[in-house]
Length: 292
Image (cartoon, rainbow, N blue to C red; front, side):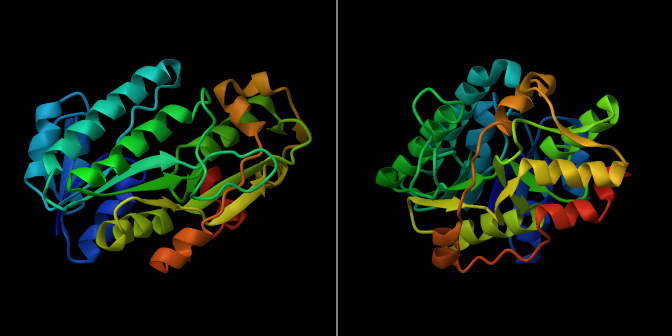
C-alpha cells in the first residue's frame, strides 16, 4: 500500500516509516519544514509539504494514497484545547477524503486513567478530563466507518521510550539534574504505562494491514511502572538521591505523575497477535542512553 503519514518525522513517526517501508509499503510523509522533509527523504519516503492547518495538503495526501496513518499532534500544553481542535479538523478532512473507499485510517489517541483499576481498550476518558478531547476526536474517526472508511485508533501510553526519546522520561532526567534530586510525586505508587517505540511502530503497521473497522488498540508494553521505580532508576544512573517532591515542582508533568494510570493491551494482543519484544521501560533506562 501507499501510505500517507502525518507526523512522519516525529518521534513515533520516525519508527513507523521504516516499519512500513520494511514491510513493502510506500510512504508519503507530511513535512512542515525543510528539516522534516530532509528526515523523511533520508528514511526513504516521499515528501508532501504542509502542516495540520493545511487542509488542502491533508486532503491531497489522503486522496493520493491507499491508507492514512495520522500521528501528528501539536504538543503545546499551554494551548491544549486549540491543539485538540486542530486535530479534529485534520481528522475530519482525512476521513472525508477517504469516504466511500474502504481505505484504512489509523489515528492516534492516548490511554486513559480509570480510578481503582487497569484501563482497557473499552474505556474512555472522563468528561472534562485532559484526555476527553482527544477521545472525542478518536470517536469521530471511528464513526467514519459508517461512511465507507476502515478506521482504527492506536492509543499510546504516557511513555513511548527508546534511544532518542525527548518526551516525559527525558524531562524527568533533565529535572533531576537541575534539582539535584530524582523526584516522584506523593508516595510514588502511581503507575505509568509504557511501550518501546519499535513495538508501537509495529502496532501501527498491524492496524493498517489488519484491524477491523472501529478497532481501539492499546500500544502498551509495560502495564504500569511505579513512578518511584522510575525515579529510583534515574537517581541510580545520575548518582542522585530519590525523594518525593511537590507536584508543582514538575509543572504540567506533575499533574500526570500524580495520577495512577495503568493500562492493559490484552485485547489488542489477542486481536492482532501483537507481541511487544522491545525492552521494558526500566530495562531501557538501564541501557544508559537517556543519560548521555
